[in-house]
Amino acid sequence: MVGEGVLHEALLSKDVESVLVVNRKPCGVAHPKLKELIVQDLSDLSSVEKQLVGYNACFFCAGISSVGMKEEAYTKITYDLTLSFAKTLLKLNPEMTFLYVSGSGTDSTEKGGVMWARVKGKTENDLFKLGFKDAYAVRPGFMNPTKGLKNTLKGYGFISFFYPVLQPLFSSYASTLSEVGIGMIKAAKNGSEKKVLEVKDLVKLVKG
Image 1: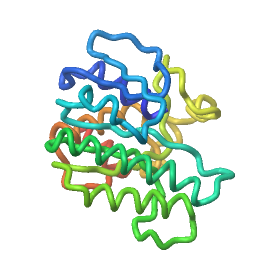
Image 2 (image 1 turned 120 degrees about the vertical axis):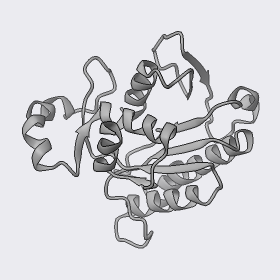
Image 3 (image 1 turned 135 degrees about the horizontal axis):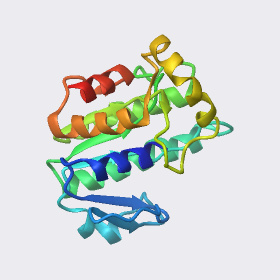
Image 4 (image 1 turned 30 degrees about the vertical axis):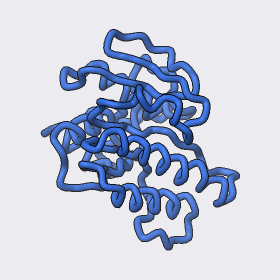
């Protein structure tokens, strides 16, 4: 959902010259600015490295729910895959900005009782240490869907009916999907003092 939303805003943005989607299957979007690279194993980019050179930013939106997963399996997908992907991009694009889509409630101490929050916290912390020109952990909460997009999570469409009421009451946890995407683009282009971007930080970046 986030990946599709960020892609949508990037294709609309005058600040974005071109977009490369690296995905396991076609995203189903056609646009003059868009190129697509299908890679079955995202942990091994060795065969496509030449096609990854020359980009200013990476919006890393891959992820999986932790429901029903053991920590070892969740860590392999959430931590190992992300760090492997990031290290390859850093090698090819030393001046790149890396934005990792994490989640509201992530545990930066890596010591809490919630498994997914610890793993995401470690992922954020170790990404910051890699040496990118800039790196950000993006922590969206509830995202009011963008009309016309197809990857909206089940239940979001119903809850969005109440968004005008919910947002003022839960402004720290609710934004639009559009604000998440635009906020990430603004952070990549202009930078941000905060490296962990919570919902309010993303909205602030959008409003300038």
